[in-house]
Image (cartoon, rainbow, N blue to C red; front, side, top):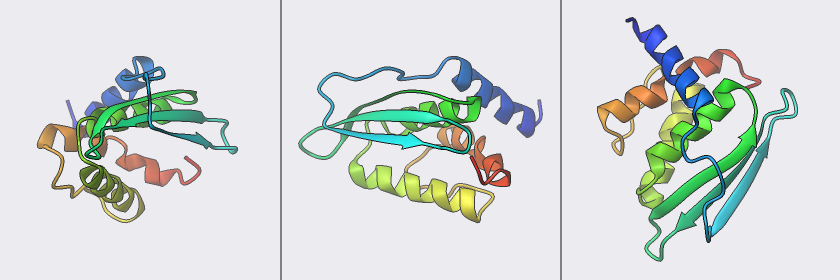
Length: 128
């Protein structure tokens, strides 16, 4: 299996069976996102503990496979991480989407990097 096919398979799997879908109990933060160009809508629920660690991260929403898959992957990758690690992962992801072909996060293992790299092709579609 080539890398492009692997990336497509990851996106399709997360799009069809999103992880952490629903609203977590006793969330401490929430955020909503809406892309008016395509209609994607996501509502993210975050539960931080007193030390700033992500105890739970879930979402509700609707949209295309890429929208749902990217949110699902994000919830998997940052759950259990500190706020600082989460910020570093997000910044590394944004750098990958904007200007790099690789993710350079020190807070992700190789399997996690492969999972997030499946979204690198999204930069070809700026409206996403």
